[in-house]
Each structure stands twice: as C-alpha cells, then as structure tokens.
Length: 165
Image 1 (cartoon, rainbow, N blue to C red):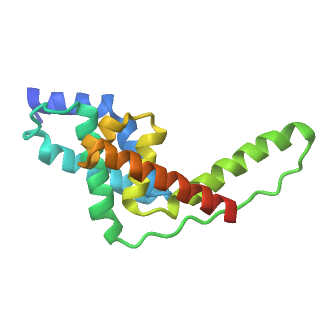
Image 2: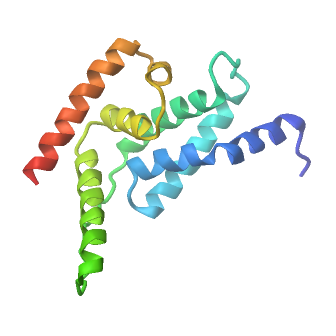
Image 3: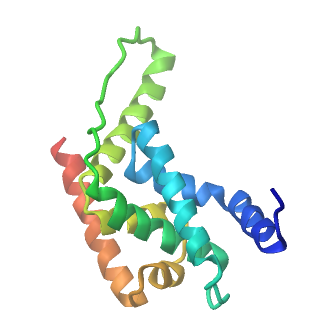
C-alpha cells in the first residue's frame, strides 16, 4: 500500500502528539481495553478532520479539541465498567509509609476527578497538563474569563470531594 505525503504528515503529527491522545484516553477510560478503543476513535476523528485543519490554532490545541470532543460526545454513550479500586496488602515500614501516602493522595485525586462532569474532567486535565488558560479557552470554545471562573469552581468541587473521602 502506497502512502502519500498527506498521510505521512498525519502519521508524523499523531506520533509527535500521541501523548495528548493518551492523556485524554486515560482520563475518560480507566480500563485499558476501553482506552485502546477510544484511542482508535480519536485517531479516526483526527484523520476525518485532517484535511480541514487550517492552522488557525496550534496543532496541539486542535488535537486536544478533537480528542476531548470525541471522548465526551461519542465514547460516553457506551457503558463502561467502573474502575474497581483495589488496595494491595502491603507490609508497611517507615520508608514505605511516605510513598504510600503519596499514592493514596493521587488515587483520591483520580477518584475525585472521575466524579466530575465530562467537561470539568477535560478542563482539569488540561490544567494539570499546564495548558494556559488562553489555550484552554480556545480548546473548549469559551472565553478566558469563563475558564478562570470554571477552574475556580472545579478546584473547589475537587477539594470538597476529597475532604469528604
């Protein structure tokens, strides 16, 4: 099968930015099987939209937007198994205690994020990925002021969820 220049450009772009796609997949699909399916769906959507990319935004912004839209709109229609939290029995010594506490904090944060709406998950993922408010606004299709307000509310919501658990 012969690959043309457009396909080579697309493949190169996907390889260069696959980390973005994986982050979105992991955020919305904790199960590896579902994650792989979503990855394929996102790549397919990116390919369908590839010809229409005009370069008005950064390529990473465009990829985030399509990946998040695919995850939020299409993939949520399918029933997924909820992530089952299992805690391994660990013999704890003083050195392991600190590491375990960090891991528990991270697991608690992930649990709290899973309780957010799909849009809130998208915004907090971008925020945690150090994406600027300007770029988040562009990806989400809202104003920077709206991003600031929503982020304040999301962080407060996460604090409350984590405090209750």
